Length: 210
Image 1 (cartoon, rainbow, N blue to C red):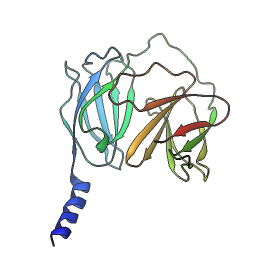
Image 2 (image 1 turned 30 degrees about the vertical axis):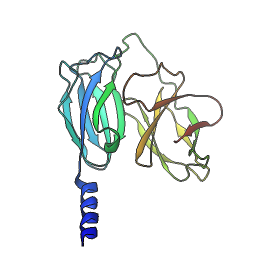
Image 3 (image 1 turned 135 degrees about the vertical axis):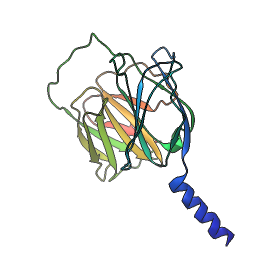
Image 4 (image 1 turned 120 degrees about the vertical axis):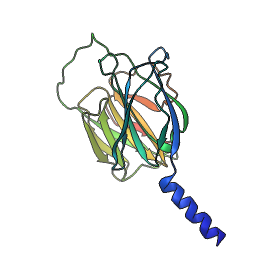
């Protein structure tokens, strides 16, 4: 009887228990970034779950994230920062989390000249292909996103209409993100850093899952 009660409690917690998250928004110099709009979306069919404006210390109210995959969209209402997107599971971000948002580059111009394609090869830590699994490809402001599925060899051809694009993969209850870009920037100082950068080149781009 006690075993059944324990199992029922665990199953109930898996569906209802929420992870407490204390978020601080930082700028490129790691200083607190006030007045950043944080929009939270639950990607398991729940839609938007909240939006907050960071205070003078770069903080928003403590969050309670229900189990599943969440997307945080950080943007500045007056356009002084670059819209930045993070995806993660509730189990990855309990406690204190700092997210870095870069300032908007006002002197950068460019045009889209088409939608180049790239071949991705997704492999596991033991070398086996990440076969028949989903991969999300999106741009940095999520105005363009598309789901793909790898083949039996863990490969898939994807379109890259913007530079950079981001590949998002959920594996073993963790979220892995890979930047697909013409040039890789300097490493971020954010405490939530999993955005491994891959420079576009001829031949397959190998994404390795831990």
